[in-house]
Length: 306
Length: 265
Image 1: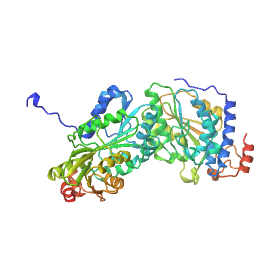
Image 2 (image 1 turned 90 degrees about the vertical axis):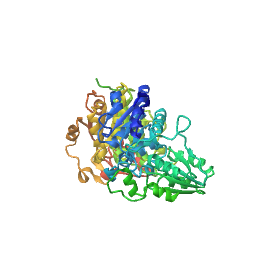
Image 3 (image 1 turned 90 degrees about the horizontal axis):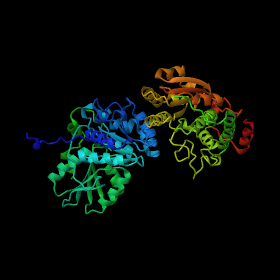
C-alpha cells in the first residue's frame, strides 16, 4: 500500500475518549484522568501526563466521590469505569455529588448495554439511562462513532457541569456528519418520504437504524446524541414540529426508563414505539451481536416494527 | 511539614461550644426535632475543626455523619461562617436547614447524610490541595456507627495508597447509633488498630477537650492519612440526655428547651 493510500483506523468510543482527553489535557491543566483499575496497562493519558493520571484501584464510589471533591476545588476530573459499576454500584455517588451538588465530574462509561457480551450480566448495563436520567443536572451523551465521541469529550472538557458519557466496548464506527462543533440535539440523517421516522440512540441503535433506513429509504432517520431529560425535552420539540407522526426509537437499553419512554411522555400526541433490549436477563455467551439477537434487538425485529 | 494552629484561644472555643450547644437544643425544640444526642457529642469536634479551617490555608471540614446537621449549622454560626441564626429556621419550609446538610447552606460544600460519603469527599479535597501545592487539610468527621459502611474503608484504602497525609478522619466515638449501641449491633473492637492496619497514623483524644482537639488537628502533616478517634458522650452537656442512647433523636417543647439550655455551661 502506498503511504498516501493508508487509511487511519477508526477508533472505538472508549479509545477515542482516551485519545481526545490526552490531547485536551495538554492545554488544560484542570483536566485529570481517573480509572478504577479498568483502564488497561497502556493508557495514553498515563503515558502523556503521568502526574495527572490516577488508577485509584477497584473503588468506584470512592473514585466518583473523590472526583466531586476535586471538582469542587476547581479541577475537571474525568473518571472512567464500566457502565454497570459507575451507574449502579456508584449510583448514589452520582446522585449526590454530580446531581445534587452539581460537581463538575465527567463519567465516561464503556461496556454500556450488552457490549460486554460473553462476560455476562454482571458486566452488562441496560439500566444506566433510566438511572442517570432521573438525576437532574447531569448531561447524558451516547455518541456514535469516533468523531462524535471526540466532540462530546471536548464539549465536556469545555463545560463546567457534570456529564455521563456512554460508550460500548471495542466497536468502532464512522460518525454521522453534522454541522458545527457540538453534535446537535437532533441530527436529521435521512429525510425519508413516509410518516415514519427512525430515532437512533447510541452505538447499536444508530448502527441498526442506518441498516434499516438503507432497506427502507422511505423512512426518516433522526439521530440523538444527548439523552438527559433537558436535552430530550428540546429534541422532542423539534421532532414534534417535524412532519413525522410515528417515531421508532432504537436503543440498547431496557424499555423502562429508556429514551423511547421519555419521548413518549414528551410527545403524547405522537406515536412513539421502542425497539430495545426488552426485559429479559441476557444469560448466554456469544459475541455482542449474538447477545443482542437473543434479546430481540436486531435488524429483523427493527424492520418488522418499521 | 509543621503543624498549623489558628489564633483563637481555647477559652473562646469553649465559649463557642456552649453557645452552639444551646442552639442545638433550640433546634430540638423546632417542630421537627433533631438528632440531638449525636449533635451534642460531635459539637466540640466541629468547633475545633472550624477553628483549624480558619487558618485559611484551604482546609475543608466535611461532616460525614450528616444527621448531626444541627451541630454543623450551630458550629458554622458560632464560628462566624454562617451569618444568620439557623436554629429558628431549622427544618422549616422555605429554608435550607434540612435534617441532613445541603450545599445550599453557606459554609456547606458537600451533601452528607447518606453515611460514608464524607470520607471520600474529604479525600478528594485533600488530593486537590496536594495537586495544587496547597497546604490545607481535608477533615472528615464521621460517626462510629458510620464506620459500618463499606464506603468508609474503600476510601481509607485509596487514601492510604495515595499517602494522603493531609486527610484527617475524626471519629466521633460516642458508642451509639440509631437503633442502640454500636457494641450491641455491630461492634468495632480495636478501632485504632483497624485504621493503623490501613496505613493511617492514629491518635486518640477526649472528644470534648477542645484544647486537645485543637492540638491534634493542628498537628504536623506527614505522608500518612490520620485517624483521630475522639471519645465522646452522646448528649454531652445536657444532663437529662447525656450518655443516653435513646437521645439519638429528640423533640422537646420550648419550656424544656429553656430549662435544658440553662444547664449548659
